[in-house]
Length: 376
Image 1: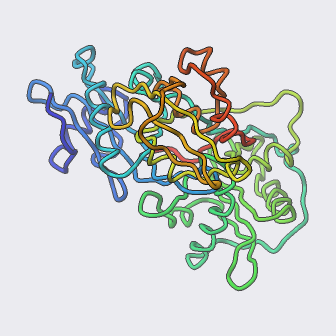
Image 2: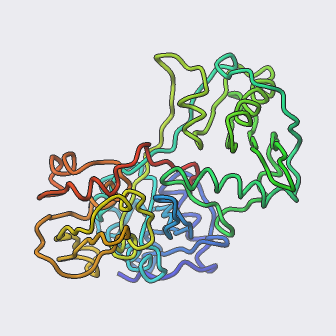
């Protein structure tokens, strides 16, 4: 089955395929910071996907991540192995492009689980009434200007580096100027061109959709929340995208029962040694030098399958070939383990791990649910 790069010549065929498969045309070909793959069957486009160039925060450091999106398969080609072949090609492509992680949103998880992806985190929207938004101090907010964009990104990156899973939103994958076209884009100026916090939102027929509420300190967060309450105007609902878990978990006023819309995303470790080398491991600084011997079961990424040693030495963590293979780890276990979403006990009950995983658990034992705040 021929699989190749998506090009401008495929734009019309890819648009028709996505409309038939997904009910929407999508972008004909990837823009800056992305690429695409297509599979052909009987001389026609049978499937298409795109891969965005992102970096994702894990343990305070960014790891190159391919955001897999717009996966569409011609309904006439289903049941002929097209999806699996395209995903296998995507895994090779990701490794060749130096992306040891791959994330995606899966309406139907089964095809992706068969290729090693597993649920690892959430993208959440919290549904609030305006009276559940606390009134805060009135701070001198103003509209965002173009010369604020670099400072806005720095403010976001300071937060994102403390929340596992968030992307760094660096260009070209994310266009910073898009905030200038939103209905609400407010900034709290700091010192010397710095930014204390910012709020971006759009008005819809359902109410106010808050895309980002980000600040460096509690006073700035309270001020932005107070401004949000004022901005809601006649809207009777506020949908707040959860970027900072402190805002929704500690500062808003929802009761025992509240409404959250959650989108689960899946993570795939494409190259275990490269992913471990790039990740931050704060817990390793408190561990003595030690190691765990793994047997990685991964029929779709043979470059890291087999016996590998995960070594903790001098507060650093690495993966090297060798060892006894005492702990069997299946490909689907690597994403939830790397993200800290599931511990060894849960992975063992799911049949994805066998052996003593206590060191693996200690390495990723950080609080909080991994989050994304962007679709791709």
